[in-house]
Length: 147
Image (cartoon, rainbow, N blue to C red):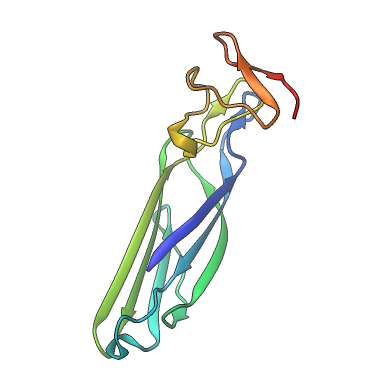
């Protein structure tokens, strides 16, 4: 069981955004291929986001399910995604979890994704600028440099 392709929008909040802070969280849950014929079967799966069970599908080995869910959290706090698969007849179990930091507040655009290379929104070094822009000065202002 793996949790992958974790994305969210918006990557950061601007200073005129008021609480509650909500993102749209996307991710994929995949039940790995059965390592032996004994592990084949229909698994009962539970998926949790931020402590709330969001789905209980049945899955077979190799199957993936994509999710997109709204999540409310305090700025910069952790959000946990968990998935557990259980094959009741054979009492086999598999699980995974992924924790990431909820976006933070930015004074101005562009904002940085908090998980991107460990960069935190609002950090001065290293700076985070969009494509075709470069950081300038101590305040990490982004200036256009061309494509």
